[in-house]
Length: 113
Image (cartoon, rainbow, N blue to C red; front, top):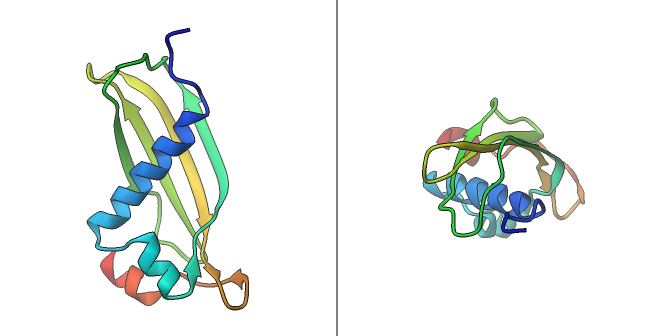
C-alpha cells in the first residue's frame, strides 16, 4: 500500500522514549541493573495522516507529569515536511524486579527530572 504499517508506531514511541531517557543519562539497562522494570501498561495512537515509505519521521517525546508508580509520555510524530502524522501516549509502571510488584519511581530518576 506504500504506507507505514500501523503496528510500527509502538516501536517509534519506544525509540522516542528510550532516547528521551538517554538524554537524562538513564537507560533501561541501568534501571534493570538497579532492579527496576518498566513495562508498558497502556498505549494509544491517534493517526492524523499516513506516513509513506521513505518518509523521514521525527518523534517528539514529552513527559506528561511527574512520575509516581507510573510514568506517562506523550508523542508527536511528524514527517520531513513537518506534517503531523500521529499523536500518542504511553503509560509505563515501575516494577520492583525482586518482588515483582509496582514500586515508586526511583529517587535517582526524580532527581534528574
